[in-house]
Length: 324
Image (cartoon, rainbow, N blue to C red):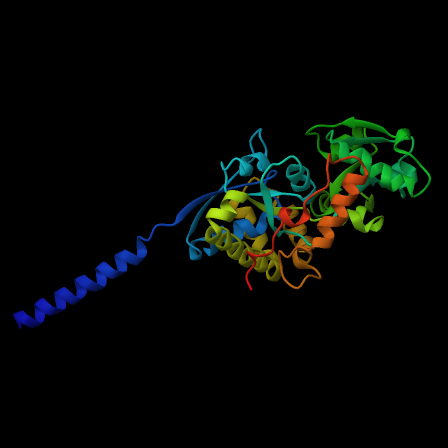
């Protein structure tokens, strides 16, 4: 009996030791920096965290807000391994030798455009003339407005452009602005919930070159060269997170609200219902990017004097980390 008891104890000890070895396996700590306050562009990230998709890939992910340096500089400097950006910003960064790379597109098509309350009477780019635009002070804003207006023999010279800073769209258009550049999936949906009727001029309705990826997931060149397995793990987890949001928008919205309780629950749910089908849209898989989209927009930026030199398109993005 003593021999049997000893064997049993030894067997139990070995099982426990093996179990402890598996459970204490260290996760790799990485930081992911957002481009802005949390919203439905980021849902897949929070789903991956809540549903354990990061852990499945061996990652312990800390999600942080961008500081004064911004997400792109933070990722480029290696202070965060991953971040959220947009094709426009990555293009500008690459031309300035800032070594960030887009590794997945969050949304397949540009859902942004110029919006105005219906009473402003802005139903086409020509109607911008004589109106006041509220923006954030980037040169690309005037270039986009002008490119749209030129199609209707009008000019951005006839638009007053002011910087509205952090003022929200609804406050701005009530106070001193006639129209602004918004993402419909958040501000447009918010207008619907407030019963504010908008005229929305989507950029993609006026030029295929303005159908760029916004937002995108980024990392830096050092991560790709030295930690490619970590990059693959991140993209694999995010792919599962966004796929969950595509298939379960309401549940995904619940997760985002739980993770970020300061958000308006009604807005998050309405926005998620609108945006979930657009993550992958007509692409063969979530996250994929094409050279044509990158080249088109880079050429548009260069032709509009927004870039000092032409973009090395092939170095700006990659699909190599997307799950097969």
